Length: 308
Image 1 (cartoon, one colour):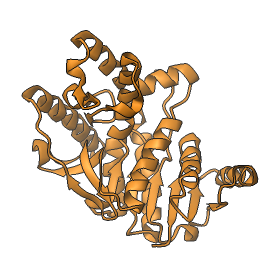
Image 2: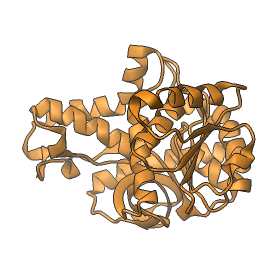
Image 3: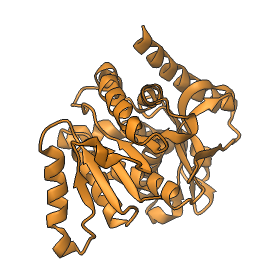
Image 4: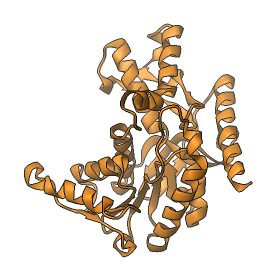
């Protein structure tokens, strides 16, 4: 294990991820790659120039020469067009399929055994694109899906009940998009389901805000979120490089679990040094299962549309 991580995409998310990896001391070296000449070098230099003040280890490299990425333990794909106001994640489908496919195909030549984390939208579909482009085993690829959505849900619940975010856990399944499936029964405050703490109308309002979470950020600052996504990615990286066997809700390739096949869907998984080590099974009501199946069907339809 050489402690090397590669980040494709030197935009807001890629830069924030790089910084967090160094702050958390999760790697010995970060290689940042971007198609725009000088952009990755600029991100790397900006971070390095802060190291005398921040006392962070200056381990960041830029890389147009992909030889620098060789034998990375983790490859993070943030590259792609970003959502603008009025756009859905789905609007990015064909644009980002080309970008993500190219990045992963090139990365896999140098790091075929890495664990791949997909951040580019529409995230679930981009996991399919990446797996095919790099011929990556299904256990070595996952998407940053439910972690970010659950974190937003946790924050909204904490603010609603005026409690510490540390007391709150939330569950969001399915698509990372408008058809995500927040599950209030598995969302708790100090172990108490929020269904026992909040009236149904307030729960529905919070669920609606979670579904609109990304669009709300875009309306406010006219660009996609990057701090919270970077933190979500970092949590996944930590689980893998520290072999935590941590249960997180990520986009995983299902082979019959929850009645879903051949589709990357956000579900609880166990993440460790071997990647997606286990898909965790939880009991769902008929209504929850129907929503999850509908979310998966939409993802599958989008995947099929790319092949058409």
